[in-house]
Amino acid sequence: MRRRVLEEVERASGDLDAATAALIKAAIPDVMNLVKASRVGARYEHTEFVKGIEPLSRQSQKTSDAIWEGRPKWQNPEVRTRVKSGQPYHVSALDMNAAYLSALKCWLPIGKLVEVDTDRHDPKQSGIYRITPPTWTHPALPNPIGDRKEPGEIWVPDSLVRQLVENHRHGLADLPTIHGAMLSGASEAMLEKLRRALAEVRKEAIATGDQVTVDYVKAMYAKLVSTVGESNANFEIRRPDWMHIIRSKAFTNLWRKALRAHHAGLTVVRVSGTDELHVSGDWRAVFSEGRNLNQVKEKETYTLGGE
Image (tube, rainbow, N blue to C red; front, side, top):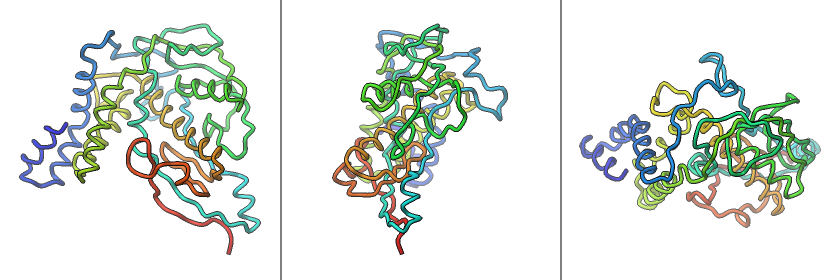
């Protein structure tokens, strides 16, 4: 990665904007080369193309498949009620750093998914599950299933099921009702070498003020996630199950940040997307401030309600 940046800066005669544009344009083939390099010496080979699985198949280019990822879009109803009565809330909008980069640490299927008749989650496997979500009874926190209004069964990624199982262990909700699954043997280390390399170069670039490399790294992990499914921009891999599992892991990571804030006495005001957490209270007593993966940064502050 460092060599690629130096080559492009030299090729652009020191024009950093031109070098950044060239690196971003090459982000997909570059990150796929890194994926292959990071898998050298692995104990097993992963399947790169998975087709013909109905829940993962789109009916057309303009429609999505049947997988529900649990993307949050939530505002605290208790805060809205109190604001209407005149109570002010001083809110900090926090940004989770490199959400998709952190989400690369997740359980990914190794081989092709196989239909399994099961009513339990298997932690040693990964894939997609057909579930009925548990009832959520905590108005001060978003439902981990996300902004879904329709009742009934849904297909969800393994990373979301793992979060629902964890919530049950902590007494927050019942277990999801599992009606079946499509699974494969899995590993949490599938993209771990890649994630660590990207994180290391990103951290170094931030420390030295190297924005070209920061933007290059961001383009690589973001485009990896967006094209690892079914994209004409990336013909080297077709794993829509991976895409959904990674994206859902980013959403559950954000949800856990909201839970942590709530347990620490902060008021969770809003949770949205992959990286947006709005809270009221002394958030710096709960989260470390900065740009590292285990830190958060403040985007803005605002006041709700009052005069």
